[in-house]
Length: 219
Image (cartoon, rainbow, N blue to C red):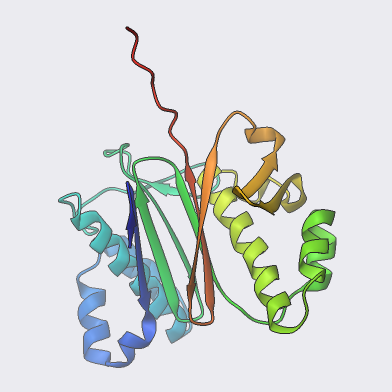
């Protein structure tokens, strides 16, 4: 999927049920990714790690690069970036058997979650009152999706801004209007972001991308 400068990639790690294929994908990744994969105890987590690496490689190929060749660094809150290619921004997320990667020429963040039972107690404790009210206004499966809608939007925003968990979940609030998704955050009130949402079966994903201010040419 592609929207202007944004590129979105997904993989379902059920593809790695073939052990030979899984090992072949593992071997083509950078030593650091293989080491990270080896550190996981469970096969499901190893598959997600390799899946994320494969998506990274796929996205980087669009720029003439390879995951096994580039140098990665990490920001203050653990967000990875490419110090030698500051014009390329990317982010990764995974849940269940799905991995997600996004690439853009501006700051970007993403999250994907398997939609399970809504965590109303969690929402009441950590979300803003308006967000809790939004979730509580639904019932059944719609309430589950409402919870994970807020959750993925919050995660994508935290990752795009680089704030990580340094910013409490109730320090910024999402609302839904006719003009789209709106967030209010005092710490980032000078910056603009737009949000995109995708559904992949029982998985819901959100992407937060920084909006470029158009420069006006002087006459």
